[in-house]
Length: 271
Image 1 (cartoon, rainbow, N blue to C red):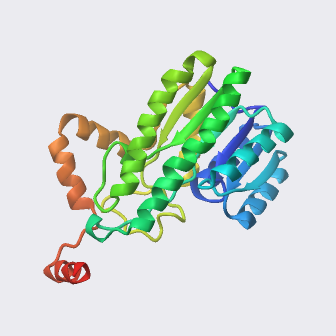
Image 2: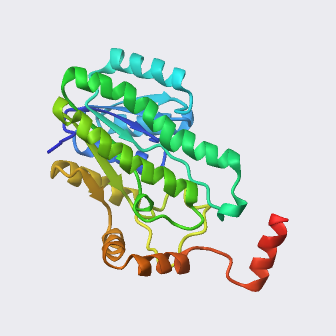
């Protein structure tokens, strides 16, 4: 069982969406200090001010997780100035949507750099310190797409599958050091990141606040994997008992070109 009351947490991707909602929820749950990591300096400053009004010490750490040297320096300084840090929430992520044959390598590289390599970099630095203090919780934000790969989101799905594997392996390695490692799996969430994407049919989006509340409930109940929303549970039930049907449903729900005109346009773009 994990409670955030009176603790210090570092949250990546904190400037918007789920990361921002988690910071606010942690504040309402009595966190002592929140270290806020993201690339958007202005949004971080605005969130820090909002958290300070709630009576929580908040420190904005503008940082690009794809730059390992910068991350190493920032974590060492944060631990020196504000530590010990009891909880790390890896929420930073990017998503690009395109049929695979239209995907672009720079976007693929960005997804891997932020979603995976950035998460690995900061987790390695934080986990070593948590092991030394014999206490800590690491939350890695994956997705329902880490369980069910979705057409038009191949690389994003791949990174989210990888996060689950990374989390499971790390959980086993760090358990003996009193460091919990937890995965959070939201379904489609109405955030800035997804508003420019073509949404899948029949999916009802969740709010970031619902995801944040599910996280704190899951932590308090000692869950190692926190699946958010009834749609996610239904989808995984279908995947377990009728995987062929779920594959068809995902194909029907995906925003793929359906008409001859759309298919012809796609062929012209390929050419």
